[in-house]
Length: 292
Image 1 (cartoon, rainbow, N blue to C red):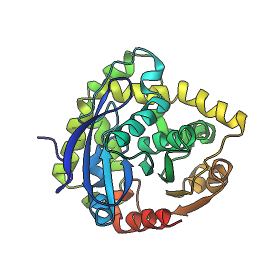
Image 2: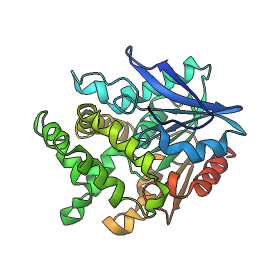
Image 3: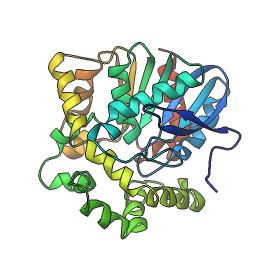
Image 4: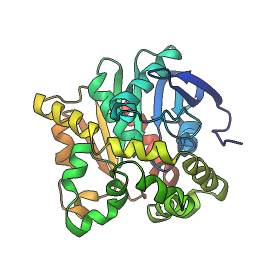
């Protein structure tokens, strides 16, 4: 049985292009959509969602290609473009009656949130980003041996066939390695939650790879076009990340300031899975963002 957020309703709603997304919905008040990362599902938001639900309608979908959401075949690069996945989120929120909403994303979900902020500035009121830089900048800051931390980005960027076969042949070891390596506090991810992430990821190898492959192709083109056009995020933006700038040798706050004039950039001592390791901190950051 799929694990979900206790006390939340589990629904299926229309995304873009006939795709349906599974989502957990709870609470009441102004809407906040929370997008999960890799290799996870909406379940990663369970602690933060419960903390926000007393003041907000909290909507936690599984991204297309992940969890219990539809996993369409990647017949062209746009199927898993972040532009398409952002359109999913806007459609899902509209189906719940929300034409404007705050959006917070972690990891892959943060890339979708970033694209939604650029493509739908009239819809996204506030934007929260956890532990990424935009796709174009991500590739630009990976240099030399330090790029080994992102080896999976290069693996899943390869043409269809080999990456899928390699990952499917050792899915638990592959996905589990990230759950281990990226956590500062392994106890924040109980055995049943870890097992759910591994089960869901093993069932979605092809679509997960397609999501990553898009980030070495069409997503870069979309970011570059916006950069060339001088496009920026019009809403208040809060970014929380580990100190990747120091580790990889770049100015993380400077990267984000180029995209987000109204920026609150913060570093955390939590690991990559900060919504699970430090839910009080992340919930407080989101509340602060929504008050801007």
